[in-house]
Amino acid sequence: MLPPELGSLVLLSHMDLSRNQFSGSIPPQIGHCHSLSSLLLSDNLLTGQIPQEFGYHANLNELDLSKNHLSSAIPATFSVSYQLWKLNLSYNNLDGRVPFIAATLILLDHNTGLCGDLYGLTPCETPKLDMEHQKRKNPSMVLLALFAPFSFACLSTVSITIVCRRRKDVKSTSKCKSGDILSIWNFDGKIAFEDITNATENFDEKYCIGVGGYGSVFRVHLEDGIIFAVKLLQSMEEYNDERTFHAVIEVLTKIRHRCIVKLYGFCSHSQYKFLVYELIERGSLSSTMHEQELAKELDWPKRVSVVVDVAQALSYLHHDCGDPIVHCDIKSSNILLDLDYKAYVSDFGMARKLKHGYSSWSTIFAGTCGYIAPELSSTMVLTEKCDVYSFGVVALEVLMGKHPGDLLLPFFCRTKQLGKFNDVLDRRVAAPSTIDEEKDVILVTLVAFACLQVNPKARPTMQQVYQALTNRNHPAFIPRPLHEIRLQDALHDYCGTIKNI
Image 1 (tube, helix red, strand yellow):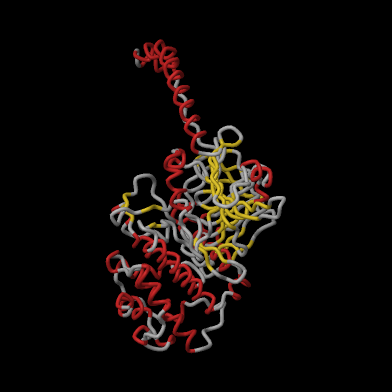
Image 2 (cartoon, helix red, strand yellow):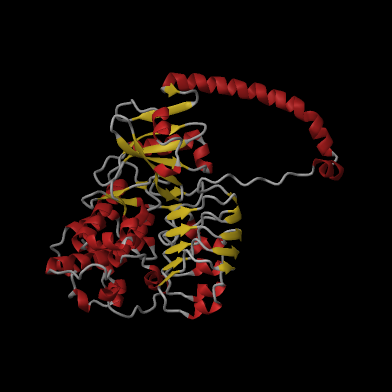
């Protein structure tokens, strides 16, 4: 059994107890190890529930509890664990509704009792009512039962009429293949639904290269050598409405920018809905920064370039697309890197076109914990400044090599932030070696803090951000050498200067 005394190892950052014969339950005291960034307990004989304390970890990046005999439901506390990057709960006996989980990579397979509306799970069943009990309780149920056959006949007639009309409309406006498939392609028009399903063997998990909150991404390699990525959308309420789905696609197909992943087309089918994108080879910024060796390759010039690329893409979306487009889910896992470390903004599943400068969030609350602008929780109104805040979080994440976490708190409570900024930079990369590199890191720092102001009106626009990052000849932005800049200076004294560009 795992001893509860493990909870006293408060300075431990990595715990790997995998592939042993540990049995019994997981001691909740392990949740007191607040320095843990990696907890690996896979391939044991552990039973009982997952301690809800694990969801409160401020630094936990990876949690692997796979291949055990854990049961009961997944704790709802994982919804607030925004530092979590990888969560592996596969091959257990877990059941119940799965809550939203704030993690980039989530593995839940081989748990026969799990259900929910996310992560490709089977929807949870609604408990059936005891009809006889309801009849005794409510006599009107008897009348309803007698009236039901007549109602069904009427509804069937109306439904058949509507379906026929819709099929007629579809035939006149779109190319249809395989019955109820509707596909629109913006390149050569040759790829069909069958090509993609055959190439992925009906979206077999072995072709999956990424999992997110709104669907899974598959690598598709066709016989003629074409390779691209397919985002298989999960069953979401707003995508069940064809008009809403097509409206989102209409926005995405008009986006053309060298720092934005190209959308080739989409397919809407009774069984699947998916988007077809160009494949960006290296994968996400998040996965790169979580791999020790890859993070070392991402030196300071590359990191600054990544931040500039993302700023340019958002400036284009906000200021060069007619009606502004808000991405709504800017985070490191939605930024892809090619083999040359050029950055591309991806995953526009929740993008919104703004009219008159704002958009009411009328469907579901989107975004990812730890990246969401604070005003969204109270106003539920989207503006471009929501993306600006998320960009600020990502910019800091690039500099620190991890989510900024508690470093964001002084923006809300205006408390003192002790220490120097040089102390929180990613130590896996050598310190900036030239004056120009040092100035670039300082500039990205100031821009990031400017974007994180709690008051949306105090944040710069993405156009101002991009101009500040590319106009590096302004000495006013470089107040002193990097090793002398205190966090308090960057937080409150200098960030306002970015808007003066």
